[in-house]
Length: 207
Image 1 (cartoon, rainbow, N blue to C red):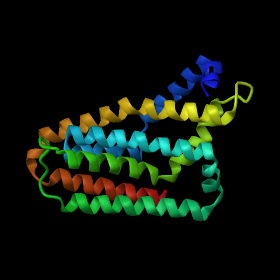
Image 2 (cartoon, rainbow, N blue to C red; image 1 turned 90 degrees about the vertical axis):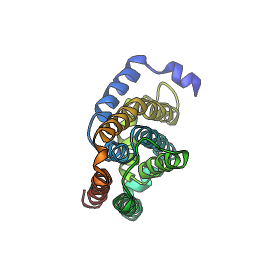
Image 3 (cartoon, rainbow, N blue to C red; image 1 turned 30 degrees about the horizontal axis):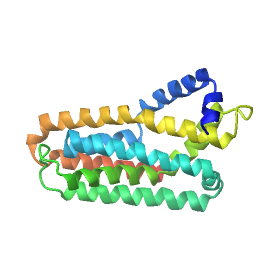
């Protein structure tokens, strides 16, 4: 795989990362999830939730490499299972956030950090659109003459996930800072997070 990376055109990689940056900046479920997590738990929680989202995208790269994404795209049943499973998970997060006590953003313990990280990773994994997106987007930057296409998909998918890290961290930090400035208002931020999670669930179902 290292030989494939060395054979890939640097300009193609640069073009891929440039297109990826535009995608990182496009509002979507992952961005809103990180914002909601930071708003409810503060900077540290927002950051680790964003890191979980970035890790979750690696799952979809593996799915694309194995060709399972093609199955999801062609099978309405498989797509529906993941789609509604993701919606149910987001609804669960909405209920938990709604019922949570007033946030204490200055004291995000290890357990809460791990929970935020896992929520970000699982939430991303349960979004089938990411698999379909990677399957449709990444191969556009591959060239069979360079080396095995699956090598290139794996490399570009890894770069896509790593590239999202600073953006997810920035989103989590921003939301956390704003929460720490506003959060003295009590449970309002939790309720706002609940509304966002619920809206994301509805978007998954209706979109």
